[in-house]
Amino acid sequence: MDSTFVRSLYSSLDPNIALFENAGGTQVPDIVMAQAADFYGKLNVQPGYPYQKSMDCLQVLNEAHDAAGRFIGVQTSGRIVLGPSATALNRMMAVALLERFKPGDEIIVTVSDHEANVSPWMYLKRYGIEVKIWNIDPGTFELEVKNLKELITPRTVLVAFPHISNVLGTVNDIVALTSIVHDAGALAYVDGVASVPHVYVDVESTGVDFYVYSLYKTFGPHMAALYVRRELLQSLEGANHFFLNDMIPKKFELGTPNLEGCAAVLGVEEYFSIIQKHEFGNGKGKNNPFPVVMKAVKEYEKGLTARLLEGLAESDRIRIIGFSKDQQPERRVPVVSFTVEGIQPRDAAEKLAERGIAVGCGHFYAYRLVDFLGLMEKGGVLRASLVHYNTLEEADRFLQALFSILD
Ligand SMILES: Cc1ncc(COP(=O)(O)O)c(C=O)c1O
Image (cartoon, rainbow, N blue to C red):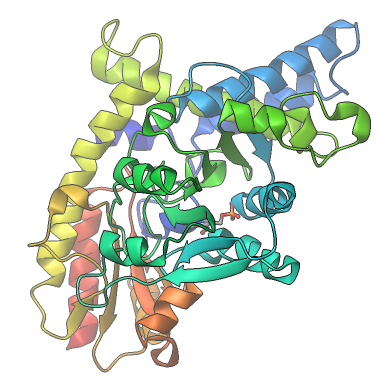
C-alpha cells in the first residue's frame, strides 16, 4: 500500500503530529468531505417526493445503505440499518428483542467489550432477563471458549461479543463463536466497531445475527451501521411509527435520516475505489473495492503492528495489555494498549503530545475490562491505535518519544 498516496488523499493529516488515536475515530479523506459539502450545496431536501432533488436524495439514502453493507461483504439490499452510533443502534435492538425474551432468559456479555455492547443488555435486567459476564483469561487476555460453554444454559437467548476489543486489539474467531452460540439456540450479536477499520469481513458468511460498526471509525461520517439477519429484520417489531412497521430499514431508522452523512458514506466507497485504482488499476476489485483494498490494508498494517510490538518489547517497564510480539501476530491489529511502570497513562499521554504524538489514555469505555485487569486505579492504559494512513516512520517517532520519557 502506497502510504504517500493514501496520505495525499487527506488534507487533515498533519505531518508534524503522529495521530495514533484512530480507534477513537478516524480522519476523513477529502472526497468524503466533498461529498457531504456537495450534498448541502446541491440536494438537501426531504427524500421520496416526485421531484428531481427529492428523488436524488432518496437515491443517496438507498445507496448509502448498500455501500455500508458492501464494506462488510453484504451484497444485497435490505439488511443494513443506519443510525447515529453503534451505542444507539444496540440499545434500540435490545429493546426490540425484548419481545422475544421471557423473564428468566439469559444473555451473556463479555468483560472485554466496549460498554456499547454491554449496557443495552444490562438494561434488560429490569425485565427479568439475567445477564452473565464472560471474563477473559487475565493471563492470555483471551475469551476462552470453555468459559463460554460453562456459562451457556438452555435459557441462553443471546451472546454479545466483540470481533476485536478496542483495547486488546485481538481478532476473535466470530465464526467459531457464532456456531457455539447457535448450537445453544441463541443469537450472536457482534460488535465490529474495532475490527471493520482493519479486517474485511464477509458478514453474511459468518452466520452472525447482528454485526454493528461505526462509520466514523472507518473514514466516514459520525454514523453507524448495523447488519441484521434478514429474517430477524423482517420479523422484529419496529421501533418507528406504526405505519412504517413493514418498511425495512425504515422501521428501525427513527426520524429524518442523516442525509449529508449518507452522502459522506458514498464518499467512503469512492475513497476505497481511488485506492483500488491506484494499487490495482483496471484489475482486481474494480467493481467492489472493499475486499481487495482491505486485504492490502491488512498486509500493510501487519508491518505497523510488528514495529510497535517489537519496539515496546524493548523496555521491561512497558507492559502490553493484549497479545505481545510472540503471540499469534496474525490475530493482531495495530491497536496496542500498554502501561508504563512509574508513569500514569495521562501523564505519559501529555508528554507524548508535547513530542508530537497523539495517543489516548484511560478505559476507552471498555470500563469493565480495565477494571477487571485491576488498572482503573492506575489511570487505565495508554493506547496507540493506528490505521492504514499511519506510517512506519510515525511508529518510529512514537517509540523514540516514548523512550525519551522513560529516561
Ligand atoms: C469496540 C467499540 N464498540 C462500540 C463503540 C461505540 O461506538 P459509537 O460511538 O458508534 O456508539 C466504540 C467506540 O469507541 C468501540 O470502540
